[in-house]
Length: 486
Image (cartoon, rainbow, N blue to C red):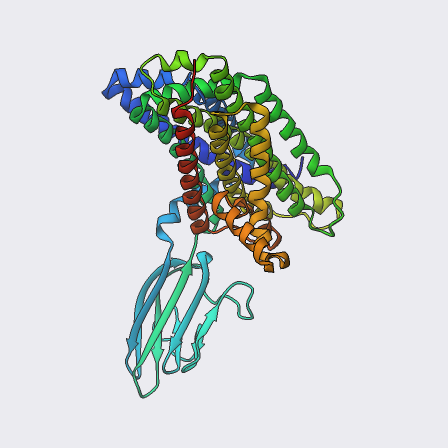
């Protein structure tokens, strides 16, 4: 219990962000209800439909966790850092200091927020915090044509202390000098940014849901009914509990990796969540599309003012929403287990007790991996929807399973020594063009190198995923357009 605040702090930060996002959404709803009462009632009604109801329970659980854990968390530092976020940035200035003079430069910052700073001067200068000190007792000396740089962990100690309001540059040479300074600053608790990201994520998810509901009401009705049916099926809960059980077991398995057990847990856990989500998507596509077509339920739906395009796209979205819900629930649970694993391994290896920032670094590394795994699961769901318009469950599972394997092997075949064979390279490149290159959504290499996927890569991966989903939906519409439903 004494280590509980250490591994719980990263989860508390995420839960706090989700809570803040939910409160903002609640405020927007109250304003909407006051301005347009029918619209407010429509939003309230939507909460009981589709995926929003279980999502509301999930958010309420995180909010309760955030409230209960706050007394033991560094909440004062978090609030102070959040307030300071708009004030911190990289400051770069270039000024000219005349010969034999002292130049005052207003520069307000907290020295504790310094991540690095540097000075570069044509002539030798000294930097002081008080006027008139000159070369007698300088804070630091910058030699001519020799850049002076400080960063954490370097040979030099940080000269600046306390709150700085201005600095003084002294040039006692017989020539003017141009001085270039750079101060890189960040808040004392930069981890609070995850609060903003979590709040934006939950707000963005709900906003997308209501945008689809507003722009395509017929598609939204089918999607809501499909997602509600999927979540209420026993297999959804079975897969959710099964995946959570495996994730829990992974923490206690001795991997014998000489201190790399956390990396093994992260890679194995992300793969488990992805595979279970894909299994749920394949099963749902077969039940809600193939079985409805064979049972002529789809004919009843299409006899209403619903076209085949709305039917197929609505079914796809109705599968994608439960996938997102599964990733949210299992993702938060997995993040907590990874954070705990850091403390657990340190105790089992008789190492020093880690600080909560160590747990946070491990946690923040897997969040992009979970997002990439979600992209991959959505692509497989789109392919499964296209296949389900023509084939029942078993062929669907076989085809999608083959695509999953080949999608991961195509890049490996091309880049391996076997790929030097002309025919093998041609087949590999053909598969890479036709099938989704699922290897793009793997993050094991980044985890092994103790790094994470950059934001621009996540953006490109999202674009690739969206493009392939559009292609899969076009194929589904072509296959379904002339399908005899009678």
